Structures are given as C-alpha cells and as structure tokens.
Image (cartoon, rainbow, N blue to C red; front, side):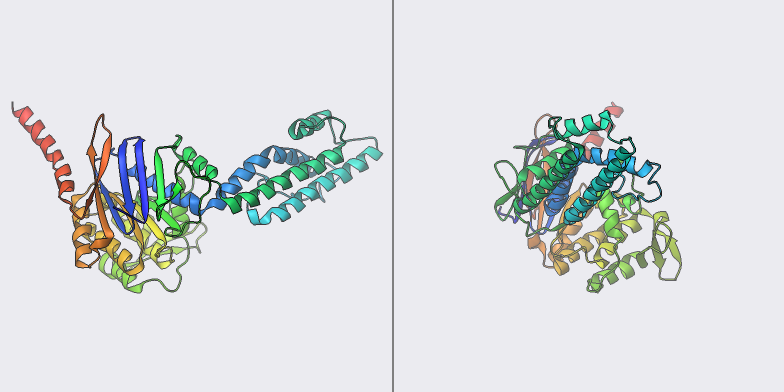
Length: 433
C-alpha cells in the first residue's frame, strides 16, 4: 500500500502499531480509547506546524531574546514613569515586549534603539544635576544578563544588548531558510508532553517530513492547510487559556469573510437540502456573532441552534471562505456524534462531494457503522471509491491496538462493533442465571 502521505506510529499511548495512508478520504474505526483521537491530533500538529514554520521560528526567537527584553522592560518603565518626562514619553514597545512578526525585525530594532537612546539622554541630563537612573541593581542586571565584566559603561552595555538581539534576528533568518527539524520536533513534543522520537513518522511522496534521522523540513506540497474538528460545539466559543490550539484556529477560520469562487453546487446542497437556510458571521456586532438565517427569513443566533446544524455550518463557512480546496486536510473526529441517522448519510455525502468536486482530503475517525457504510456506498455511487480507504483497530495485548488496512472491505468494521452486542448478551445471560 503506497500512499502520498504515510503516517507510521509504534507503541505510542494506546496504539501498538499503525500504518495509515492519506491521499483522499481515510476512515479509521475502532472502539473508544483505541487511539483514533491521538492519531487525529498527531496529523493536525505535524501539518499545522510544518506549514506554519515561521511561527515556530518566531516563538524560538522570542524565547532567546526574552532575558534582554526583561532589561528593556525595566528601562522603558523608568522612562515611562519618571516625573520629568511623564508627559512626553510614549510606550515604544508593547507590554509583553515580544517580537510579533519576523518581517518587522528592523522596525523592532529601531524601537529598541529609541528606548536606549532616550534612556541615555535622560541619564546624561540627570547626571548633570547630580542624579542618576543607573542604580546598582540595574547595573547588576545588565552585567549578569549580558555576561560581561564590569569595565563597560552603560552606553557600551546597551549597545551590546542591541547587538545581541540583532544577532538572534539574523539567526531567525537562517532558521527560516534552513527549516531545521528540531523546532518541529520540539513543538510536537510540547503539544503531547512526550518525546515522540522513534514513535511517529510522517512521509510525503516517500520522503520523511517528520521522524527520526532527518535534519530539515521540506516545504510541504500535498497538504498546505489543515483544520481539526472534534466537536461542533466549538463554534463561537470564547477564547480562553488552556484551549487546544485547533479550537482557536478553527474559530478564526470560521470568521473569515466569504470569497468569490466557492463551489455553489455544494453550498446549495447544504443550504437547501440540509440546513433549510444559510450561515454567516456578523462582525457588525460588538464582539461578532454567527447567524443562522432560515428560508422563511427568520434569523437565529447559531450558538442557540441544534448541534447538528452547527456540524454542517462549520463546513459551509469553510467552503464559502475558500479554506476548503485541493491543498486542505480536514480532520474530523466522530462526526456522527451529534447527527441523527438521516443527517449521518447527508454528512457522508458531503464528505464525498467535497473530495470529488474540490479535492479536499479527509481523515475521519468514526465508531459509527452508519457513517462508515454511508461513506463507502456513496463514494461507490459517485465513482470515487478509489479515493477511499478504511482501517480498523483491533485489540492486541494489554489494551493496545493495531490498526489494519481494509481497503474497501468494511465487513471487519461491522464485526468489530458486533462485540458490543456480545457484551450485552453476556450481561443479559448473566443476570438471568
């Protein structure tokens, strides 16, 4: 089995072994706790972070210059609150002091130089009056942070601080050009709080893009955008500390305005045959809100609508703002969880149509035989079955699972879920005795 994208997992959490291919619609099935969600999150973070490598470099650079920013914060605070210039000095850098964009390094350095020059000018003025801003504490902070001897004066120390920060900005440019694997590896290890070395491997066209024994991350070609939906309840959720990254990013994507060129036939299918209405994001409100406008003209707050409506709304919004295209991977965890049987079939049809007509790639984690069979037979009807692959998780040892490739044969999935009925028979027969 040779696929464009290959995911290999060995002995990680509940997964004993998995060799999963992605080049169309991939469906993995298994009982709760078999590792489907782990697989989904791995795919999300690998493709998300590899395609947003500049954010990894930015975070790394900010971590490297943070000790120097602490000094600048001290200096800016002295300038901001000194009685002689309180009315004339404005805050040059934001409160968190960090660089926000790698394209703004020169502007950032200019701001740092302004702070240092203002400080030196004020210090010279005060010294003429017999005063000083350079306390023993500030001098010690400068010396210990810059790791130099006491022979340098304040101007020399501040000049060195600017040089050190500029050096890290130059290193950031080098990191962007070379794309070392270590930053991607560190980001995944942090997301899972686990060292994934020798546990997880991802290949594109046969070349490793995540895994052991690689030094640089190539620019990805097949998947350039990724979104992960594990619950429709995330739509409109207020941002708070501790939320998964994919919740925050999904909401940001949903708020993007519609663009010309989206597939109207698919939107009409969602609008007319399922939702009986249309979904939009209204940014005219103070905080913005998602609206569901029914065909009869009545309008509702989407957050107060049924979860089934939200499930289709997510897809419709991403379709209309052109997030969904041939470079997109949609990872959907248990899409059937909030749908009645009829809408499970419609959702499966939507998945097949989005891949057939637009080229969207899907990774679907499901434990619904209705969803599995609907995708299987609708794909066959739409002459797209060659793009669909099924996998099932089977218990190996000690509650660890091996994922087996099924091709288009979904009978083993039904057999796997029939075990729940065997368990029911066991309890019923036991109670009768």
